[in-house]
Length: 585
Image (cartoon, rainbow, N blue to C red):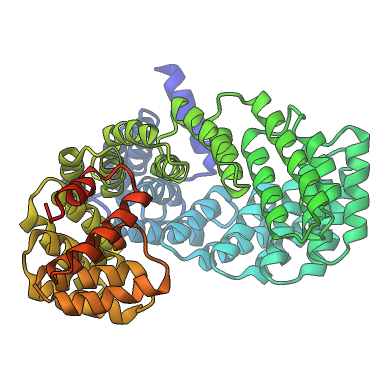
């Protein structure tokens, strides 16, 4: 107990507290049941001492009660008011903070030489959002008593929080006059000058900081950076080159100089420096990736001869190789490599990097999307199906992956599986996004599976989205003619198709074939004769023309055209049968 009492009285002495000091009673302070009874000086001292004891034990509820009793016994006890304010200042309740402000104001009115009172008052004002008032309290403090560096620094911070940047800057200047140069103060001054738009002063302050601490590369880098933004490019380059040559560069000087070379159009210098920079152990992988991407953009945007482009391409690949050697399993490095090879048109290299990236844990959807697009672009259908199945394990709600899977199944003529995947894609994708391609694939798949009504629904969906999808109209009307179904609709569509491009032999043949299906043989002959006379007829056109002639009763002419068709397509067994039997099958 002796030790505890010693600590208590030590705290009281540090506070400069006198329980007999003059004060004013706070109306919100907790009252005890015995408050109507007068309290002696000894009792007041006892309550204060007990309050300090429970405060040290972190029993703030009891401490608060004893400090309140001490303040009731002696309304002038500024130390008790201070301790109550200190306890209340830890609260997040507005009412508690307001009461704390009243209490500390009273304490300061009674005792103007205690630094702890001023500092607590400033913190309470700041907690209430009154940062300007907090700064004013500290101004009163430094004007009346000795204050340390932290007080001046806090005062500048309060001015800044209050939005009074000029006063914050002046406070830091006053700080330096009183205490001398400090790194953190110089850095803060530069930040404030930049915010105030006083760029030349920021540049001068940055140079002063560099000169005061010449062995700190970061200050050289800071000044060089401001040289570039202020148009002093030559000085910035000189500083960075000197820093790099000294061996003290921590890598960022090389990065900054490379960026400057790129922005000034010196791509060859940038590439040369970049090749040296990527091997430096102190440059982290994130900065190397940023550097490489900047080099790629510069190469894409620059105008180079074929020889220069080839040289730059080799340099970029060498830089990428060096980065990968340092970070062989870094997924972001691999993704960056994949992106580079896509832009350079080297799809198989891009695929190699992307595949490696997903094996190293890359799970970004865009990576899988790029892989699927590259598979499709290079007609790697088996790979497309495998990758789309893998992607669906991670992204089952991505409609585009279902679409790619369905496309692969369609290409492999697995129409039932294609329908399942494409229907799933249709549920997940907005129709306007990919509806034409999706519905067309579904239509062709349903047609192949002889689900004709579903096929027609999908074809019509395409035409609702875009009535001028002529290649779709061509296939749709041809299928209707073959099935001899909805022939009026088929004829209307085929006529529009024919009129849209009358010189297109495929469209002309389709229109003629629809007319043939409707029994309009003479009209069909007149239409298809255009293709025959133009000398652009293929085997199908010749066979169809023979069919039309046969239905017009001109069997001998029909056989001649069938024979011409067979000479162009000797594998057509159905046509050979027509010729042998001299009639339609």
